[in-house]
Image (cartoon, rainbow, N blue to C red; front, side):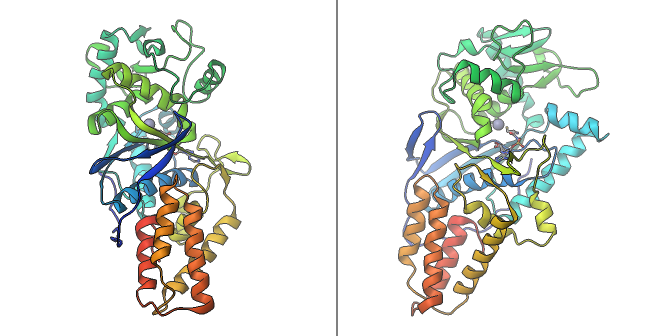
Length: 409
Ligand code: 5CA
Ligand code: ZN
């Protein structure tokens, strides 16, 4: 499918620094030194409702990854999926008497609009689950033929015991895994499974549900984890730099995906860093489509909120923190945006070269966006207090804030 238009990324003088990110698998920092092309896979939306601030916060984190790499003069090969067929989407469509394909197309369009407004750089490959099915079927067949998958009443399950490295992404104990499996799309209590954690690879066709030709698997539709593995392996191969998503994807989604890939290729690890963004909450609870406690990007935009202020609200929080969306955090960001715009609209100002280096250093250190904002705040405060003679400084700050933080001043 098509992605969305890219906003310009101004080139900055000098070069950025290599990016260090917190890796969930090892529990510590990993400094990534990709070749000329950095490779990243970020899990996309399940399009049954509009983009909320939690989604936007997660995509903001991985947009910063792209921007840091671009600033080191690398190309970025960024792949993102759209889970355009899955249980929650079909359930929501049925509940509203909607056609599921129309619901998915409508919400994916809205997501593209939101991402464009927020100046998130698009993926090079934006791939839907449905269009990935011809690539998924042979992978499931291979897993089955290798003895890593088994059939249960026509459905095909992956056997987690076939992967010697199972558990090395999320590092959870068996009890925690079982609880999270039940909460996040698994079916640990289904009788007949070899291991309660085994995830579905291919779901045999159900009455009233869409299904596709599955070759020797029979008609059906793909499981969730194999969808992302098929797309990532097809477009990035093994050993890519970053597998990204919100922290709710560490288990089971990224754990299972890593296992599928390990058994399919015999290689480990699938990604050099598993990177997870914290959860955004509203009224004390994780924002989620299933709970309905949501603040939508599109609603704020239609209410006249400047997308740059939305983006600055996201940037004011470290990507790994869990945080709460309030009207107060948005108002603070709008106020900061006003201060920055006033500061760069003057014909000259205090020198900005060191500020660019501070932003670069902050982002290279596990995407410390709040520290980057603080550096710009200090420059803006100096500008307001005493001004300066550097005629290039306001322009340089504008370009740096745009290139590295995705905010147009
Ligand atoms: N389609 C799958 C991934 S393959 C999926 O999880 N879709 S989603 O629409 O539910 O979520 C899209 C992304 O937003 C995921 O990375 C998820 O971790 C992240 N996300 C969802 N809710 C929040 C939240 N409240 N705060 C931060 N990130 C969130
Ligand atoms: Zn995914």
